[in-house]
Image 1: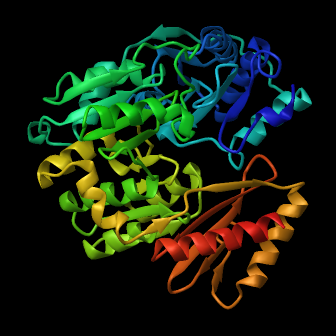
Image 2: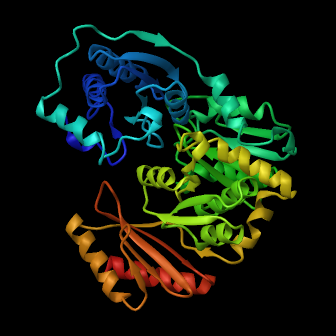
Image 3: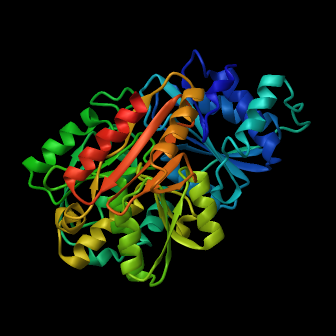
Length: 449
């Protein structure tokens, strides 16, 4: 086994050269052993390799003495719901999320859908497999049952909105042939919206495009369709549908921090004074909206395990990340790919505005670069670049919560290393488009010199 298949937040690898059924079985054994679990959930996405990998993971978990509730094919956030609502000891989703079809992996959580990560759990399981220290199988294997959670999950998602408030907007939906195609129809069939579906057939070969809307070419068709249909909103999901992405009626792909700001407004309308957690890459739009509406905004380091911990520690009602992960206290602090879609439709309905109209004040005030990635030679070079940026911009307010963040009156930026490869990620914002472009080019040049 290549230990590098264990990433910062999950297992992710090429199938079958790096991740196969034998390794999946051992991961299942290690997962149960690490948690001391008595009863777990296992589910899978639509990838062609997912059924056999899920079967192998289940065999490993059963051998180690855990009872397994097999939920079959469903979205990752449904697995979170299943684990937390049924009070199971943990759960695993066989998925490679937004990666191309030749990849697969495992996302794992403990009780209450609390995530395993490189800092808590994944390293221990990796060591068991690497060192050959998996405990012996249990004397009595676990028992396997099956369950369908879709109906209960749909009701849970609808509990976040006033269903009767939704107006008949025109919505273009692109599931990317991923798990969104299984779930979205169950939700939107109950709404008065005019729905234009795209790539809704669940198909692990991804016949239309990869299920990663963050890549421009993958969202080109939905952008074209939104404009052509004069739609009020476009919504796209990644492969395992725990993230959603939005396109406004002008065809603009909307950054996750602007969506976080809108969702924060929606939350604060219902929960005055709520605490909102956001990641440090985000536009100042988030903290400005939260503050203006009387809430408390807490900036946090990047990563779902860190966001969820802060939300639990500070009673955060909602958390958002630039990359399209949105977390809700009343969703067991877990991220969800469908609650944000319904909440935005509700906000549009309550305010009588399209998504473009909701966004207009933000677009006129906050000018963001989007995330700009630069490959560097090694992790040593990564640190040298971060040190150099800290010195170059020492006259600004410099912090090191995650990489390097620098704040000036008219602009600010964060540069942080990737968790998995020698890569630096820049996010920058300024008060004018000219200043944004000037400072963006300046910082990129420093990173790449």
